[in-house]
Image 1 (cartoon, rainbow, N blue to C red):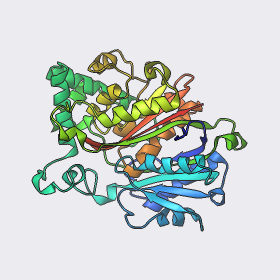
Image 2 (cartoon, rainbow, N blue to C red):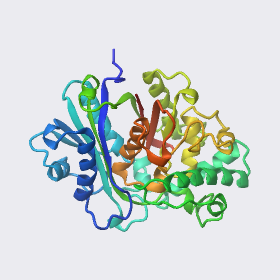
Image 3 (cartoon, rainbow, N blue to C red):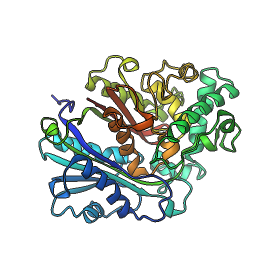
Length: 399
């Protein structure tokens, strides 16, 4: 029988660069910046690392783990490059956690980086969405298929399915973005640090209706890192380690588009992954037991549907919780307390680890102005791809 990973590993150090237009930094510089904070936080040195996982989606394809080994002088140890679309950073952490839990090594490093601004591209680089979502059928898919376009379709479908007028739907999405910008304005590592009003968000230029400028996350450079060790060793390094309670990854196999009953108003992969994650962590009622969340808010509609797919808001009723301030920083379960992808942008290899960085700091009581009172359990949700074909990684951390 497979064993749970719960409480077998702990994070003893994390680091995160400032995200933004880092024209003064190359990828190796960003790696070094995140790693330096991480090593200092854990009280270890590069020579103590026994294995490492390197997440990067774009610039280092075909180069294995050599860039990470080179930047940090990780000599003669296994360094593995991983990529899982937008869940790449979390995939790196999964490799490190699984290796430690399996007893293969005692101290492992996970680090993700992406340098997107230098590409000059306005979105995510790489293959077309048609090739990713519908392999073998690319010639039959419109070349104009875009992430904003697909998530805009999800938004209009959600509005229709749950009886929201266009005005009600736009207001709900705007409140999500305004909440994140409020939080990000207090975060010195965020790319965008200015509050934006609900009215300004509603009236912003449209990217793909109903998604406007502030409904879409930006493009940034950044890196984040974590050092993982065995749970029974963790307090040898620090008095306040953060323990891994659950780690679940789910990938769509295309069933959603194989039938006509998929409603396009939710992401089934998130539903399946969250059910397994809660079971592994022993969580019976996530609405009552989760202290805070970092979810993959590449678009405001993504965050809205995640409230429901993660089994926090009842199906079709996320708007009620949004209106009640349930997910705001002083609400019941703050979502994106660091500002989320809305304020950090989305350097692919770094995003998942950046989410866990915020959970880690919150659980230790070190999040500054954004600090949640006495958090016990934090969840991060990292999603790659676009509906319906998604990969989802869920991490639950606790004390």
